[in-house]
Image 1 (cartoon, rainbow, N blue to C red):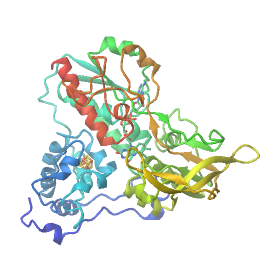
Image 2 (cartoon, protein in one colour):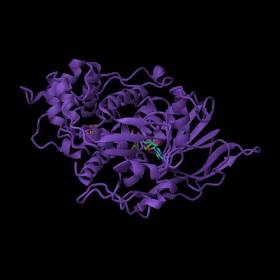
Image 3 (cartoon, protein in one colour):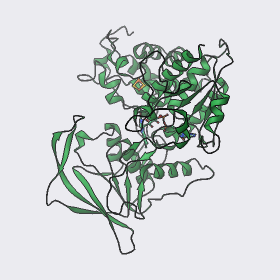
Image 4 (tube, protein in one colour):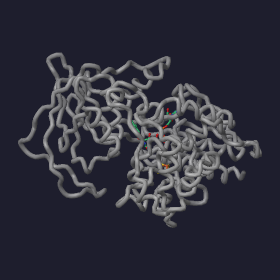
Length: 470
Ligand code: FAD
Ligand code: SF4
C-alpha cells in the first residue's frame, strides 16, 4: 500500500462534487461529477491496509476492497476491474447506489475519527474507467457445457446469476417482461442516482459474453413456465417483490393518490423515450405529499422536484434518526428543496367536492417502546390531528411478494410472508422445494438492496452448477 501509512491524516476524505443545485433540480442525470484520476489515487491511498478489513466483511459480496484500492492508487485499472468482478457482477451499479454509510464505509477503520475511505466512488471509477478503456471480460478460457438455464427476471439477482453461469460455460437465457434489463435498477431507481446508459452498456457486455436476453416476455403470459421447465436444465426465479403496501387509509383509491412504483416507472418510460409507455403521472405545478421514509420515498420526492411540482413534502411517522432512507439521499433531497415533516402518521386522505385528493389528515407521534425488530414504535399524540394540503399523494410504504399463479403447479414452497423458500445454507444453495427451480433476490429475502440481490444471484448460480454437476 502507500509508503506513508499516515496518508489518511494528510489527505482528507472528499466526496465527489455535486452539480449545481439549479441544474440538479431540473435534470434527470446523475448529480455527482466523477472523481479525477488524481483524486481516485489520493483517496484510495488513504486506506490504512489495517490488516482486518471490516469493510470487506460488511460488504455483502465481500469485495476485495483493500486490494483493489491499492491497484486503483497505482493506476492499474484493468487489474482492479478484473479483481472487482471476481466478487461482484455489477460493481459500477453498487458504487453508485449501495448505502455505503451503513455497509463498507460504515465499517471502515477510519470512519469514526478521520472519515472513511470513499470506497463506493473508487469502485464506480474503476469500472467506468475500464469500460472507457474498452475493457470487457475475457471469455477465451471458458469451456462451454451443453447446459442451459432459464433466468426469469433481468434485475440484479437474475443478471448476477447469469453472469456467474456464463463465465462457467452454462448458457443463460434471461426473460423479462420489461423492454430493458435492470429490473428496479432501470424502472425503480431514477436516473439522477443511476443513469440509464449504465445498464444499457452492461447489456451489451453481457450479450457479448454469451447471455441471451428475451425482453418484453412475461412468464405466465407470453411464455409458459412449463416450456421453460421442459426446455432448460434449470430455472432461476429473480422476480422481485411487486405488491405495493398500503396503509388502509380512507379514500386511498381517490384520483390523485398514486403508488410509488407506477409513478417512478412512468417517469422512466418518459426519460428513456420508450414505446408502449404507461400513462405519464405528472406532478408539475402540484403540491405533492409523499408518505414514507425509505429509499423509494426519497426517489419519489426528488422525481417530483424535477417534474416541477409546486411544493414537495415528505411525511414520515418516526423521527429523522429512525428513517430507513439513506442519509446521503435525505441530504440530497433536502438540498433540492424537499420539505421533511417527521413524527407524522397519516390517518386518512381528504377529497374535494369532485372526489379528488385535497390533502392528508395526519396526527403527530412520539416514539414509544421498541417493537419486535427493536425499532421504537410511533404512538399518536391525541388532539394533534391536522390536514396537510395536497393535490397529489404518493404512497411509498414498501413492497411485499406478489402472487404468481403461474408458479403454483410447480411445488415451490413459500413462507408465511409469501417469500419463495430457497435456503442460503445447505448442500445446494438457493434451491427451492422443486429441485430444478432456484431463486434469489427480493423474491426470497423480501425487498432489500441491490448488492444483496447480486450476492444471492451469484450464490444461486453456484447452487445450479452443483445441481447440474458442471
Ligand atoms: P428486481 O430488481 O425487482 O427485478 C425483478 C425483475 O423480474 C423485474 O425486471 C421484473 O420485470 C421481472 N419479472 C417479474 N416477474 C416476471 C415474469 N413473470 N416474467 C418476466 N419477468 C418478470 N437498493 C439499493 O441498494 N440502493 C438504492 O438506492 C435503492 N433504491 C431503490 C429505489 C426504489 C424506488 C426501489 C423500489 C428499490 C430500491 N432499492 C435500492 C432496492 C433494489 O432495487 C432491489 O432490492 C433490487 O433491485 C432487487 O433485485 P431483484 O433482482 O431481486 O428484483
Ligand atoms: Fe461497498 Fe456496496 Fe461496493 Fe460492497 S458492493 S464495497 S458494500 S459499495
